[in-house]
Length: 109
Length: 115
Image 1 (cartoon, each protein chain N blue to C red):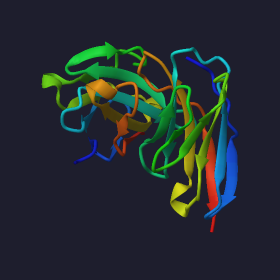
Image 2 (image 1 turned 180 degrees about the vertical axis):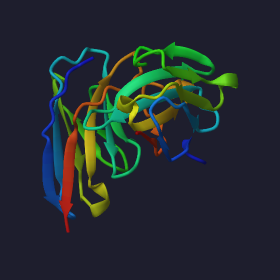
Image 3 (image 1 turned 45 degrees about the horizontal axis):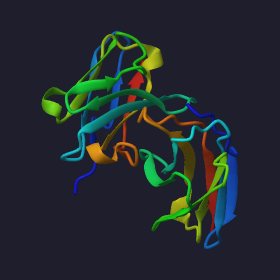
Image 4 (image 1 turned 30 degrees about the vertical axis):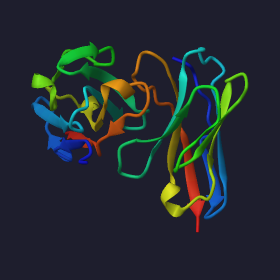
């Protein structure tokens, strides 16, 4: 399993963009990069995934470095509901998700 | 579409007793996973079913834990006998067969407290 490094915590203001970084320098060539988040008192929730190209969906954007050793989850306009722990998870054929410590995101009103 | 449901939401038992947790995946999802978070630790994978078969049980901590998925629908996770270190939140997740590499849908979890 690829090792990931994320900041323990980040803070942002409501309606501002948030960039959550993740280093995954040991990622293998076939691993997808997944992002999940866990809101308080809930189970983890899928956010987005990508392989090589940048990806967008209704929740967020994922920017993947050209060498794939890092990625950034972008929340374009953070809301209070986006306060959660965000996990970057490289995943390959094993299918199981390996959660690290994640980044605790605080959103200020 | 109903999400993944887990029962009970919270269970308090004494050391040495038996507890059975249940997970109902999203209808039609062949993949079912169990994870848990013990106090202060990261969420850890326990095992993975494909339909009724155990695909990967490498995360099961010991033989006090027994998971079943009869008929390939709901799953149960039995802990017998429970120990103090089993306290934590147990999550179940499911995914369709053709999207196993993408998103897993998680339930709200069962909080287990062993006293």
